Image (cartoon, rainbow, N blue to C red; front, side, top):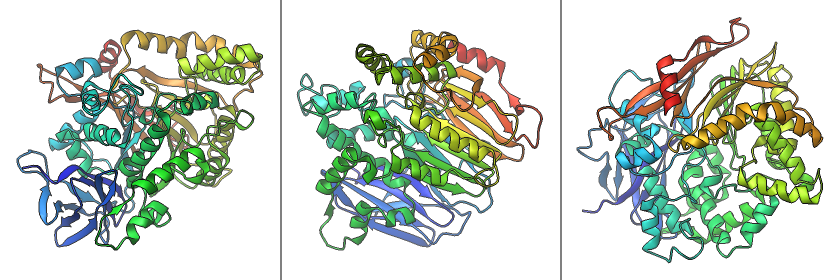
Length: 573
């Protein structure tokens, strides 16, 4: 019999007394979550023929761990019997408990068999899910943050292309890329329906922010890129579908109950009292079109405090100002929002942004040079060449938006120097995107440590040749010449310098961090297939160390360790 549950449940925003559970159902339904003697319910809303609900479970005791069930129309549909996975739980935050979280980016949706693992590697998220389900001694996190490219709308799998071919001519634009909301809905289903990952996401709270491939490669790289897309016959439907589906599948679950009170789309859902299901298709499409046309009309970024740790999740894609004379990775509204949240008084400040704030320094210089050239520093002919180069090799990170980079660098230094309240132990940027993982640190002799910790990809490794090229560009060729070419285009020097601490390593990875007495503990884990058992990979640690505060240790890292065997294995993979 066909189940009435299409996708989910997904445990999304959770705080000390409430939890938000997201589902997609097959039809107009009433969805109920039950945990012990408590129950909470919500009516579905519709978008382009799909049906969703966000159940707000509130009034829960802090620090509770409550097994729950999900009902649709009074019939229990989750957990599914016979899966072998532990019961899903609602785990509210415990006051005073230090934050523990996982994070990563760039995850393709291909089968978890020998063929899929050969072309895309083992899914680190799935290996993590299997390890958590085994009941071992792995510490359970409070949150997993997905930092971009949760789905690939432009680089589709064979399974996605089969779906596209069944409904339209794949030889006509946009071809194998996604066209509309229906195709986005199917892509999300492919991404989140694997039994192990589905179980994990039903019990582990998650937060998400998009990057370019959630919409299209190089999304908002420049004004010329945007104009070339807008000139096509298919882009308008793509961007509207991408943003509206993102609001439904990803962003809605990021919102706290307080944030939902100020979200106009959610308030339409909350106020709906009619017997007929609320259809938000036209309203969401209009909203998405407006958000693309006027980025200041809506903010995708969000901020959460976990005791003495602040997590700021920054949209570095949709909030851009692409007008050449005002070019910025964060527009004025977004920058003001970030400025108001970059404050001391916390033990750790975590800034999650899909694009690394601190690229390898040579590559940062190359990107800043390319921005200057593309905007006319060397004349019109060089500008055209610079723009082609920018799009060809993805030179559109923070370094390629110098105005924004300099502003955020100053904010960061002020937090670290105690000019915005008591200085934290660390200001740490968490990022993905670049398909290799590494750790960098700003060179400082006092104040907070300023760190960059990248985890990319979860499942989409670079081909071997691209790894060598990327490493050479990031740490070899670019390093000695980057500063020279940047200065030749009159790019101002960064307000501080930074250096690589560890990496790069190119495994599929999921990173974790934990606030421990010694400082900030970070570790990266990957899935390893043994004895040909593709469906049950073992989780293995690639790198692990602890960043100590300056006040507590003279050493750069406390408890720093990098398993040499894993280092060699990572280099070979």
